[in-house]
Amino acid sequence: MNFREATIEDTKALQEIRHSVKENRLSNPSLVTDADVINFITFRGKGWICEVNNVIVGFAIVDTLDNNIWALFVHPAHEKKGIGRKLQEIMLNWFFHQSDETLWLGTAPDTRAESFYRSSGWKDKGLRKNGEIRFEMTYASWKNK
Image (cartoon, rainbow, N blue to C red; front, side, top):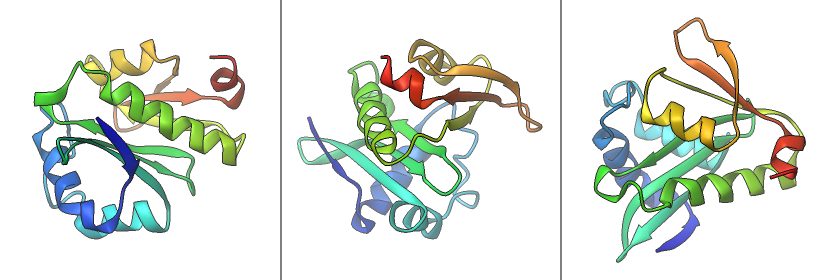
């Protein structure tokens, strides 16, 4: 496995992974465009990818303007191999070396993503207006891990 920063050239592969994830409500291509991905990895934040045999199999993107985890996806054929955890670790380490702001994310209830974030130390802060669970990770929680 190779982990590296995401580039504009990775956009197509990131979109393919996003659309392959079974529990992703944003898998409709019109909801997240290539321009959105490029904006988030070049202007709004930063992204990382995982490659296996030179094929991108997972990615994570943090939005530093809104202190939000914008994306964390692993291709279904590569789940349960620690890729999501490693991408999350890289992303959180980078973010909290830049800022001590609280990070947040939203995910649908009763999903594998909900279980993943709970087991990773994210704190449930209730439901958002769209029905997603709002999770938060503070600098202190990250530092004490």
